[in-house]
Image 1 (cartoon, rainbow, N blue to C red):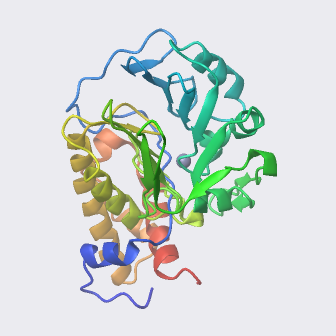
Image 2 (cartoon, helix red, strand yellow):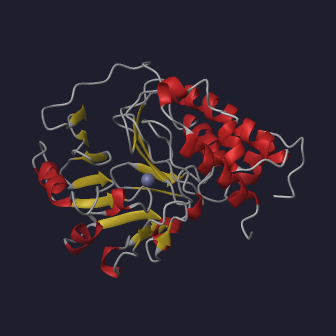
Length: 315
Ligand SMILES: [Zn+2]
């Protein structure tokens, strides 16, 4: 971090970040950033119909799962936690036009995304992940800020098809790497062109302040860079589905980009003045957004630490 000069701009840092590290955005309170889009109605089980063959399956206490049904089988974007897997797969099997799950995407390595891997792999599904996600799943991870420990997955539960930059299913569904490390360094998006639906996993938090998981590469600059990149993948009618929270629009992403960009600039300034995480929290760099976003202290601390982690990875 001694490399950083006082006048280094966000753009320069973001340029340096492309192809770089990783970060985790776990939301806290359920809050929406803007009301640019009317939310479609969910049915009594919480399943949200995006199109005749495309659904967001929302199980209590679980992150969003997207299911596409069709004659070639079901495509899932994320598989919920292991504890919720049975209920989730039952719910998916009950969707109109549902058949066996043939393809599962892991948008990142977190247990909230990968809990159905083992079951679906055994049933013959293809599990697609960015290569960094596959690698994180082969190793134990510990979060130093709260001591939380994540066990590696058994071999049988690992993604069996990994990629580096992008790919395409026979159905035309496209997927690609969000290389900014917004949430982790293995974030991916999945785009459903026919329905104009973009799944972005944890790279965007639709629900409160994200937890910045700098242990597996995420950082505050990556949140900003990811938001910038994802805007280029969407148009005004695209429905954007994050891991947490409601359906978002391009307008919502613009609001988030401005907000996180401002926070990033402020934290970078504090870093350049030699301040630490506690001083960053005391400066209240998010105070303009706290009323709608909730208590920011953990987020600010992790975001600041992520600058250290990103700018001096060997420290
Ligand atoms: Zn996550």
